[in-house]
Length: 188
Image (cartoon, rainbow, N blue to C red):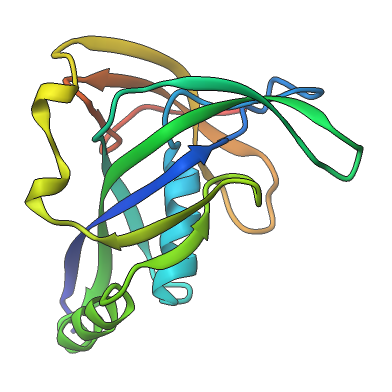
């Protein structure tokens, strides 16, 4: 019988601009206030090349103040107005399920993948960013106000690759952290 282990990872996702599109806005590009778990999951899958392994985003820490800028971006439908996030940095914590035999090999793959920063898109091609290993100095607690802030409904994940309906959860930012573990899910 194979015992299931988990490997915990923490990464930094950052960039000058980001747009994690809210699905309720169809004409204009309006970003969520922070990176949603679904977008963080996609960026991690792209950067780590771990294939169909089972994993979960546990926490998202906002490491810079939330700021918006209004801009115009190009799209297949021509120029579009956009409300973008400005100067973002997030620390994303995730757990990856694996067998006990795979754990050491998985840790090597993760370390090699994050040895140098990788380029990623932060929601749009016009919003390049990087993903890299987490260092304790990446968080300056003085920048984030200690408070509870309701971010509203946010996309957590897709039900499956074949199902196009997302699963939403009620996101709350508590002292700069959104704890996704155990959040109540609601299918749309």
